[in-house]
Amino acid sequence: MKLLRRSESEVVFHLGKREHDAFCKLVDRYPMVPSDFSPLSRFADAEDVGGDQELLEESLTESKKESKTALLAMLNDGKHFHEVSRGWNLHLTPEEVDWLLQVFGDIRVGCWMKLGCPDEMKGKMPELTADNLEFYVAMDMCGRLQMLLLHSLRPSEDSGL
Image: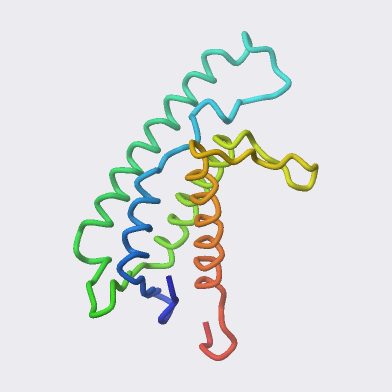
């Protein structure tokens, strides 16, 4: 994926045909982080937050369901992806770029969890197998896409943004 241009109201990326296919397959994984991943409190007793924790999980589940529906609609609405001779151009608002950052963050953390929460700084490397290699690749792709999306939001000195 390559940044073509950006303005205050629009960011345009180019994706080759294979990149477009990989992008769509990647976002199709969303959401991956389970709704119970975010406890209300690490210190309170489960009995104290039980009902509230359930409400939080239900709310997160519903929010992610709505976000997935909106994400699929965006990818298929004909306004965001435009086919060009060597692939596709993706037109996004800065708000949509921010939203995709969150989507890729969810996928990335979900893949990390599927890999057993590796921590290279502590020497805990993921044990890659034929069954989990896809999660490692997806996690890496999400990180690279997040870097590109963040770069697209960074004001450039020559554009005046």
